[in-house]
Image (cartoon, rainbow over all chains, first blue to last red; front, side, top):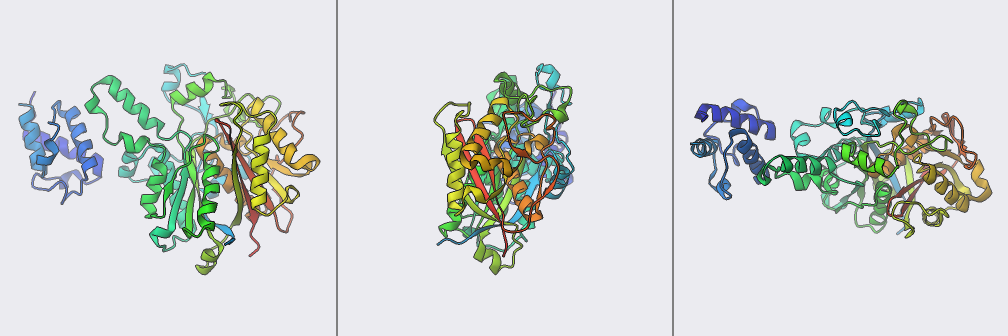
Length: 82
Length: 413
């Protein structure tokens, strides 16, 4: 069953919180993963691996280069599960 | 340049305590850090050995969540120990290029490797964590310390099984004596209380099977010893040249007077029964210290509590010290801590340093019936060390025929 974007954001915030210890409520769609949340490339790959398991989706091999904001990841997951 | 090398900081997390102070107090009190394993995997895999020396304070209770998530337990122990040692040394301001790390493991990130393999077996390759490689590598603990302390003078890991961290401390000597760096954080850690290493060590009949009496299982030199007991944890020393320490007004615990490694080239696991390689390492460490065997007032033996190993080390000690061996008090502290594998030399180095600094030799517990083939003066309750200059050695030997010995001298200023 497809998750709503709100559900995806909440689930993604849990994953990012686990990886970075940032409070889940500070993880908003407009935030830049690298500039605002200080997520490095290795953490980004970890977050994507965890999101694949959580949402049952797959990221393309070069997906991370197009994912700049939290919102980009939410949209990607929403489209991928469609 | 032959400047003295001194010890100015100590840190440890062990089966006896979460820091040096509590570990040393428990050791002097004759406590055992060995307990029954309550994990479900013990029964699931029908492990023949059901106990170990688990860290008294889990590292995840001390470190930040992000550190726990990105570091294998072996690196977590390393970071806890190194931070304590660095703080104990006064957390000095140093030029990063003049600070090095020599920090070992015997096995490395075995939990990370095997957890990742479980993940792979349960699903697809893409579910394997991207952090797997940096977490499993044996230099992970050294790298974690190096990043935490901003050490840019070289971060190195020597892997020589159970001799690893004694070798790491010995390696620090050359780096400091050459003038390449001013300070070295040296030591080792291990976190291998996982069903596979337990099964593997048990398969080679290396482990004690005294499942009904875990606290009595590690019993070096006792006639009823039946193998070693696995332990986990880490220990770190801050080492520096005497000039550097004096210039910054540091408290000095002891002098690291010498360190040497040799190899047996005899058998992959069995010690050379003649003990010649181990004896050569002891003599070389003493020579580097400018000392003679008759100067040694205390020995922290490798003494893992295996039937064969304890005898082989005794033979090597006889070669070095001859008839005067019976007058040198020996402590076998694995009786209390278990065997921390790649971390064991570092914790035993701390016990030697504190023995010299506190003038108190730590006890060897569980020696109920000393093996008549091992004629040693084994310290069984805390014993005062006489006043005056004192030299002590710590032995570590590892599978692969590795022999590593370090010598410490009391610091008289």
